[in-house]
Length: 265
Length: 265
DNA sequence: CTTAGCGATTATGTATACATGGAAAGAAGC
DNA sequence: GCTTCTTTCCATGTATACATAATCGCTAAG
Image (cartoon, rainbow over all chains, first blue to last red; front, side):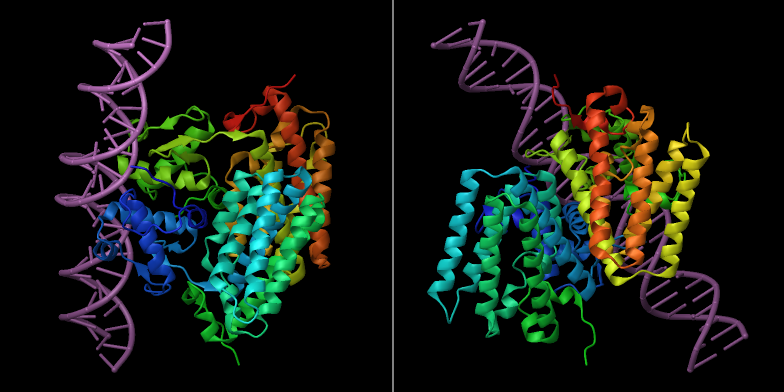
C-alpha cells in the first residue's frame, strides 16, 4: 500500500534501476511513471486531452489510479487542467522554459547562500568534493570523447548534495518541483552540446563553477555562492538557445516535444 | 464538472465571497476547501493521521472527492504522505516557516527583477500605483486605529499585481505554491503586530518598500527591485519572531497551530 | 512487569457502476 | 453551401463494493 511519493528527481538518486515491474509499486505509482514517460516521450500530442479511459486501456490499470496519476502530474506541471474537466498535455513556450531555468538558478542560489551562511558539515563537504573529483576524472579521462551519461549522473548528484547542504525540506521540495519540468533540471540540456566542439570548454566552465561554489560555501561566502549558482544555471540558457536553432540537438532532450517552437528565420 | 483548480491565493482575489454552498463547485473542490479550513483552524491535530472515512462523515461527501482533496492538499504542503499510506497533518518547525518566507522573498525578488528588466505596461504601473495610493489612504485615515483587514487585502492585491508584472506563469505558480502555506503568504503575519505600538511604524516601512520597488521597476532598476522585495519579505521574519514569543499574537495567524513551537526560556 | 506474537479491526488501494454535463456529429433550415 | 439546432455519444465526477495490508490490542510467555 505504500505510496512512496514518486517525485522524479528524488528516486533517480535512490534507486538505480527498478523498472515498472517492481511489485512494491502501487498501481497509482505505476500509472504515474508510465504516464510521465508517455508525456516525455511525446507519445501524447502536446495540448491534446488525456482521456482517462484511453489511459486505462494503455496502462492496464483501472480509472482510479489513472485519475490519481493525472492529478499528480498536473501538480507536477506536465499536465494542465481543462476548465470543463479532465487534463491536457501542457505545452511550454520558449519563454517559460527560460523562466523555469531562471527560477531553478535562483532557488539553487538561495540554497547555496543558506549553506554558506549556516555552515555545512564536514561530511557534506567531503561528499561534494569527492563528487567533483569524480567529474574531474571523467573529463580528464576522455578529452575527445567524454562519457556524457556519467557526467550527467555526477552532475545531478552534485546538485543534489548542494541542495541537501541547505538542510531545508521546503526549499528542496520547491526545487524538486521546478526541476520536475524535464528541460529545467540541472543537466537536462547538457546533451544538447554533445555534438558541439565546444562541449569540453562548456563543461570545464561548469565544473569550475562547481569548484568555486563549493569553495565559497566552505569559506562561508554566501553572496558569492549565490551568484555563482545563478550564473551556473544560465549555462542552460545558452544550451537552450542552441537547441532551439537545431532540431537535431533538441531531439536529445527528453520532453522537448512539449516546447512550442518559435518560428525562426 | 468544472474543476476550477482552487489555488488559495488566486480565488481570494477573484471571487470575494462564495462560501461552500456554491452550486458550481464540485464535491472535490468543496472537500478541498473544507479540509483546508479544518487544517488551518486546527481542528485536526498536527501530526495526526487524517482518516478518509472520518472526513467522509465530517464533510458529507464520498471517499473519492475526499481522496482527491487529500492528494491536492498534500501537494499544497498542508498534508504529508504517510509512508504506509494515507496522509497526516503536517507540522512546521520554526525553521521551516522562516525558510518559507525566505523562499517567497527570493521569488518575489525574482519577479520584481524580471518586471524591471523587461519593462511593464502602463496599465500595470497605474494599477500598482493606485493600489499603493489606497494603502496610503488607509494609513492616513486611521493613525491610531488602522483598518487592518483592509490593509491586508490591499497588501495582498499589491503583491498580486507585482507578481503579475513578471508575466511568468511558471513563476506565479511557484509563488502560489509557497504562499499556500498560510504563514508564508505576504500578509499572513501582519495581524501579529496589531496589538503592537510599533504597528504604524512597521506598516510605514513596508509601504515605503512598496513605493520603492515600484519606482525601481518603473526605472528598470532590476537589481534594486530584487533587493527591496527580498528585504520586504524579511519584515515577516520579525513578525514571526514576535509571534513566537507571544502565544496571544500567534493566535491571530491562521494555521499557527501547525507550527511546532520551540521551548523558550 | 515487560515483551513478543497473534488475531481482529480498520484504513487504504483498487475496481467498477451510475449520473450528469459537454463535445462532436449529423440533420434541417436559411 | 453555410449556419444553427438537436441529438447522440462519450468523458468526467461521484459513489460504493471489495481486497489487502497495516495498526492496534489482547493474550501469553519469559
